[in-house]
Amino acid sequence: MATTLNPSEISELIKTRIEKVKLAAEARNEGTVTSVSDGIVRIFGLADVMQGEMIELPNDTFALALNLERDSVGAVVLGDYENLREGDVAKTTGRILEVPVGPELLGRVVNALGEPIDGKGPIDAKMTAPVERVAPGVIWRKSVSQPVQTGYKTVDA
Image (cartoon, rainbow, N blue to C red; front, top):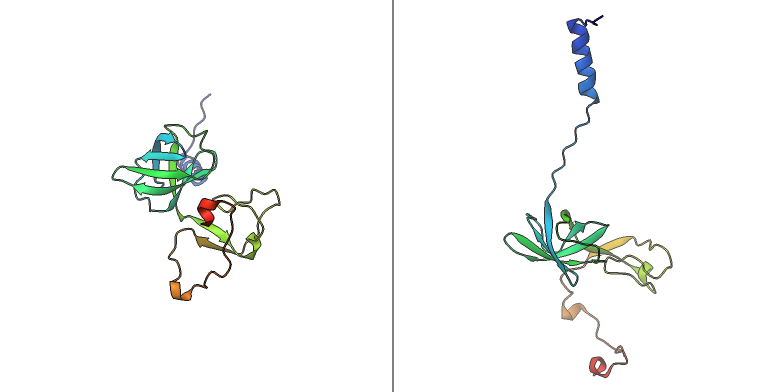
Protein backbone atom coordinates (compact mmCIF):
# COMPACT_ATOMS: atom_id res chain seq x y z
CA MET A 1 0.00 0.00 0.00
CA ALA A 2 1.50 3.33 -1.04
CA THR A 3 1.64 6.21 1.38
CA THR A 4 0.34 9.48 0.03
CA LEU A 5 1.36 12.86 1.34
CA ASN A 6 -0.53 16.01 0.73
CA PRO A 7 1.35 19.11 -0.52
CA SER A 8 1.43 20.82 2.90
CA GLU A 9 3.08 17.75 4.49
CA ILE A 10 5.67 17.64 1.72
CA SER A 11 6.35 21.35 2.17
CA GLU A 12 6.74 20.93 5.94
CA LEU A 13 9.06 17.95 5.48
CA ILE A 14 11.27 19.92 3.09
CA LYS A 15 11.39 22.90 5.49
CA THR A 16 12.49 20.74 8.43
CA ARG A 17 15.17 19.04 6.34
CA ILE A 18 16.50 22.40 5.12
CA GLU A 19 16.61 23.78 8.67
CA LYS A 20 18.67 20.79 9.83
CA VAL A 21 21.33 21.28 7.16
CA LYS A 22 24.48 22.80 8.63
CA LEU A 23 26.21 25.10 6.19
CA ALA A 24 29.63 26.46 6.96
CA ALA A 25 31.85 28.30 4.54
CA GLU A 26 35.45 29.00 5.37
CA ALA A 27 37.89 30.75 3.07
CA ARG A 28 41.26 29.08 3.35
CA ASN A 29 44.50 29.81 1.65
CA GLU A 30 46.19 26.46 1.06
CA GLY A 31 49.25 25.32 -0.80
CA THR A 32 51.18 22.10 -1.39
CA VAL A 33 54.61 21.24 0.01
CA THR A 34 56.89 20.59 -2.97
CA SER A 35 60.14 19.90 -1.11
CA VAL A 36 61.47 19.36 2.41
CA SER A 37 65.19 19.74 3.07
CA ASP A 38 67.22 20.60 6.17
CA GLY A 39 64.34 22.32 7.97
CA ILE A 40 63.25 24.33 4.92
CA VAL A 41 59.99 23.67 3.06
CA ARG A 42 59.04 24.96 -0.37
CA ILE A 43 55.31 25.47 -0.81
CA PHE A 44 53.56 25.93 -4.15
CA GLY A 45 50.26 27.79 -4.57
CA LEU A 46 50.18 29.62 -1.26
CA ALA A 47 48.84 33.03 -2.32
CA ASP A 48 48.50 36.10 -0.09
CA VAL A 49 51.03 34.91 2.48
CA MET A 50 52.82 37.64 4.46
CA GLN A 51 56.54 37.89 5.18
CA GLY A 52 57.05 36.41 8.66
CA GLU A 53 53.62 34.75 8.73
CA MET A 54 53.16 31.43 10.49
CA ILE A 55 52.18 28.61 8.13
CA GLU A 56 50.34 25.59 9.50
CA LEU A 57 51.69 22.21 8.42
CA PRO A 58 50.54 18.67 9.32
CA ASN A 59 51.20 17.16 12.79
CA ASP A 60 50.79 20.50 14.64
CA THR A 61 53.95 21.82 13.01
CA PHE A 62 54.42 25.43 11.99
CA ALA A 63 56.78 27.18 9.59
CA LEU A 64 57.83 30.81 9.20
CA ALA A 65 57.37 32.29 5.70
CA LEU A 66 60.61 33.98 4.66
CA ASN A 67 61.24 33.67 0.92
CA LEU A 68 58.21 34.92 -1.02
CA GLU A 69 58.28 34.26 -4.75
CA ARG A 70 55.68 34.55 -7.52
CA ASP A 71 54.26 31.03 -7.21
CA SER A 72 56.06 29.51 -4.23
CA VAL A 73 57.11 30.24 -0.67
CA GLY A 74 60.23 29.17 1.20
CA ALA A 75 59.62 28.67 4.92
CA VAL A 76 61.70 27.63 7.93
CA VAL A 77 60.10 24.78 9.88
CA LEU A 78 59.72 25.62 13.58
CA GLY A 79 59.75 22.09 14.91
CA ASP A 80 60.29 18.52 13.79
CA TYR A 81 60.36 18.30 10.01
CA GLU A 82 61.16 14.57 9.77
CA ASN A 83 57.48 13.64 9.22
CA LEU A 84 56.80 16.28 6.56
CA ARG A 85 56.48 15.01 3.00
CA GLU A 86 56.03 16.34 -0.52
CA GLY A 87 52.33 16.73 -1.18
CA ASP A 88 51.43 17.76 2.39
CA VAL A 89 48.92 20.60 2.70
CA ALA A 90 50.16 23.95 4.06
CA LYS A 91 47.73 26.62 5.30
CA THR A 92 48.19 30.29 6.05
CA THR A 93 47.21 31.43 9.55
CA GLY A 94 47.05 35.20 9.10
CA ARG A 95 49.29 35.56 12.18
CA ILE A 96 52.78 36.98 12.36
CA LEU A 97 55.09 34.95 14.62
CA GLU A 98 54.77 36.15 18.21
CA VAL A 99 56.34 34.68 21.33
CA PRO A 100 55.58 35.15 25.04
CA VAL A 101 57.60 37.83 26.83
CA GLY A 102 57.95 38.96 30.43
CA PRO A 103 59.42 37.95 33.78
CA GLU A 104 57.62 34.59 33.62
CA LEU A 105 60.29 33.41 31.15
CA LEU A 106 63.27 34.11 33.42
CA GLY A 107 65.13 30.88 34.11
CA ARG A 108 63.06 28.88 31.61
CA VAL A 109 64.17 27.04 28.47
CA VAL A 110 61.87 27.52 25.48
CA ASN A 111 61.81 26.53 21.81
CA ALA A 112 61.53 28.89 18.82
CA LEU A 113 57.79 29.35 19.45
CA GLY A 114 58.28 30.24 23.13
CA GLU A 115 56.94 26.88 24.30
CA PRO A 116 58.64 25.39 27.40
CA ILE A 117 60.98 22.46 26.81
CA ASP A 118 62.51 22.31 30.30
CA GLY A 119 59.88 20.09 31.93
CA LYS A 120 58.84 22.76 34.44
CA GLY A 121 55.27 23.04 33.19
CA PRO A 122 53.48 25.72 31.18
CA ILE A 123 54.52 29.37 31.12
CA ASP A 124 51.76 31.78 32.13
CA ALA A 125 53.08 34.83 30.27
CA LYS A 126 50.74 37.81 30.18
CA MET A 127 52.20 39.42 27.04
CA THR A 128 53.48 38.46 23.61
CA ALA A 129 55.68 40.35 21.16
CA PRO A 130 56.45 39.83 17.47
CA VAL A 131 59.75 38.11 16.77
CA GLU A 132 60.62 40.62 14.04
CA ARG A 133 60.44 44.22 15.18
CA VAL A 134 62.42 47.44 15.02
CA ALA A 135 65.15 47.60 17.65
CA PRO A 136 65.26 50.60 20.00
CA GLY A 137 67.61 53.38 18.91
CA VAL A 138 71.20 53.39 20.17
CA ILE A 139 70.53 56.50 22.28
CA TRP A 140 67.73 54.77 24.20
CA ARG A 141 69.64 51.56 24.96
CA LYS A 142 71.72 51.03 28.08
CA SER A 143 75.45 50.63 27.56
CA VAL A 144 76.94 47.17 28.05
CA SER A 145 78.66 47.34 31.43
CA GLN A 146 79.26 43.61 31.95
CA PRO A 147 80.24 41.51 28.94
CA VAL A 148 78.90 37.97 28.64
CA GLN A 149 81.66 35.35 28.72
CA THR A 150 80.76 32.27 26.69
CA GLY A 151 84.02 30.38 27.17
CA TYR A 152 84.72 30.32 23.42
CA LYS A 153 87.68 32.46 22.38
CA THR A 154 86.28 33.14 18.92
CA VAL A 155 83.05 34.52 20.42
CA ASP A 156 84.53 36.32 23.45
CA ALA A 157 87.33 38.06 21.49
